[in-house]
Length: 419
Ligand code: PLP
Image (cartoon, rainbow, N blue to C red; front, side):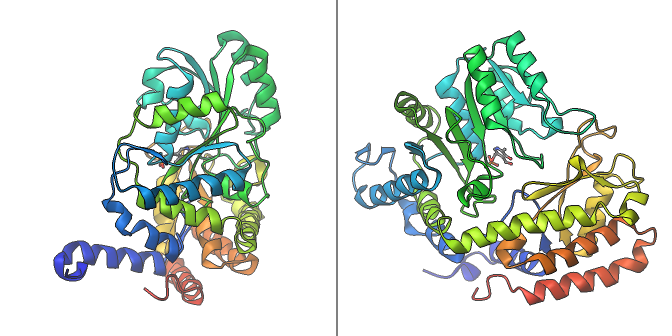
């Protein structure tokens, strides 16, 4: 058995280049993180060879005794981490977790309320081209145009008018806590189920630094690779025994075949790590970093360039930069920061006058750099690099200096030093 470098030099070269990119730039994409080496090892293990259709103790294949151990560990650990009675750890991704959860609760044609994609929702919360928008009758709710906060009065009004079977709460680009109790009250008022998609903020919940949706929602879905910092994948949680059975059937055989037991092993490792004090410290630095960046981007020099921060700050791991009144659009801002060695993604903001491919926003998140070891002083330096890059009118003069500052930060916090 030859090493990858010899078997496939092309793929090996791309992997090596990607490792260099991750090491030498600053990753501020809000949905990304750096999985620990132990997670990478579990995910790159021989469990990838094993078929295990079914669930622990009830498989359709022989030889499942060890993957049963792994899957039971993952289930028990995630239940303990979030305090839920039941868990399904098999969804291959967050999108598949949401698809299975909806499949378990809805019939095609049923009505669903979800946050509009253009206002920070996710594709799977009802975008027209997504399975959710095609299978279900989706009624989007929004943020207010005055303060960019979720309009719960609108949610209540739409619920009364459309009598949805399911209300989805959760977001991909929204910087504040959701009021889960209010969502529960609205759902109960119309006999709807409540699903919370905590994909983005699950790590904060695990650390006790964000309200937990588990006591309020019928079903909670999440990814395992964002703030949670594990392998790419999804999880579904519920306290309802009957619903748990339907969810299991919706994942397999409803939606998936063989589970990715190597990924489930990596999830188990990540859930254990997420219960540690070190993880809590990471999440504290994640939140502090986002606050530091928001504060810098609200300073006078940035405001004078027509740039602001939606909702005037953040309670979570991300900041949504508002470029609607700036001559710089989302794409230019993303490119400008990329040239400085900082990776972010442009993002439409609510009521965006520019087309989605250009957009008037940038989403900036701190989980990956917090994992890398950054604390408040380093985030202050990152924030100043971002602010300087966005406000300058002479980027060609300024960018070399910013790139050097990025390189210094990256060198101070080596990533995957043993690899
Ligand atoms: N739910 C939310 C809120 C998300 O932000 C995302 C990913 O961006 C997903 C679900 C989907 O996760 P995945 O990309 O693993 O399918």
